[in-house]
Image 1 (spheres, rainbow, N blue to C red):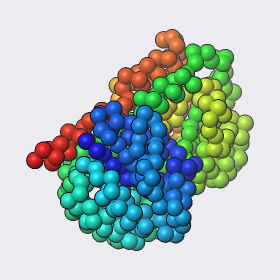
Image 2 (image 1 turned 45 degrees about the vertical axis):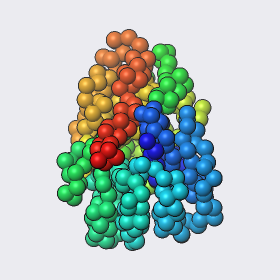
Image 3 (image 1 turned 90 degrees about the horizontal axis):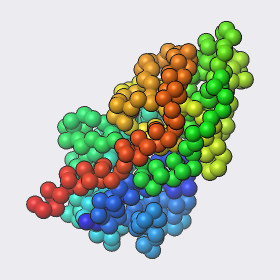
Image 4 (image 1 turned 60 degrees about the vertical axis):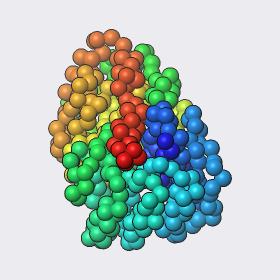
Length: 381
């Protein structure tokens, strides 16, 4: 079976680096499930069509250079129609993007009707709380028109339907190659003295990551002398970074909170190696999400880190190395975090055990096989 994945994401974007890792994981999953797989995406100012094989994206030669940012949101989908007709897939899977002004995806799906089974993936649903300063009515109109044109809907939302269209839920995962690579680079059974606990949060910092809850928790923790030092390491940039810095300064938390900015490669690996606990997004309720399957949580687990979380996630529900905290805006209870960590380290080498759990639990191949089971009925009539 030939599967074409289409996503208007730039492979070189720092902001969407995690998203592109996810996409490559999905492509790997389809390849492991026995498919021939290709992807249409952006590479700087060039729209590219590449075949995925054994971890590499190899250009098919079908590309469109010189696309300006102003043109991209519309011409990308026009070129995508040509990619479908030339590569001739059995299945087209599109990563949904909100149509703020122009019904780009509606026109795309209408143009490929009869050429392939048309599927759409909602990476987040609902998502409207993330959209600010736009005409939501227009977005909804275009979305409904698009859903009338697609054959199947897949999403990380577990509702039975999305706007009366049957929904096939899935959880985000990591590629097997990435799981193995992260474990090799980051998992160590050696840790620093017991009286220091390093918390790690990696994010493209936005309100829903809830970093303020951790900072406020540390401020409450340090109102009295403590035998255990708890540090927060924040990796990443984003809209909330300046606000978080001001919050730290106002609470006099600069001694215990370090903002590393954007890190990659060996520098990022070193922060993971030194970390003891990872913090998942603690503010998902702020955008009306009460169930998630974020890639970052899976990266934490593959790196051998216990996870503090608030939003329900299937990979965490039966995991002994996680702690769920209230799903609200309250300050994180740091003494509870300390107690949790001290308890789990008594069981032995925590990081290798968590990495082993991730290896056995997280895989895009399973997701790909579920998607293929849905569409095979269409292929075989």
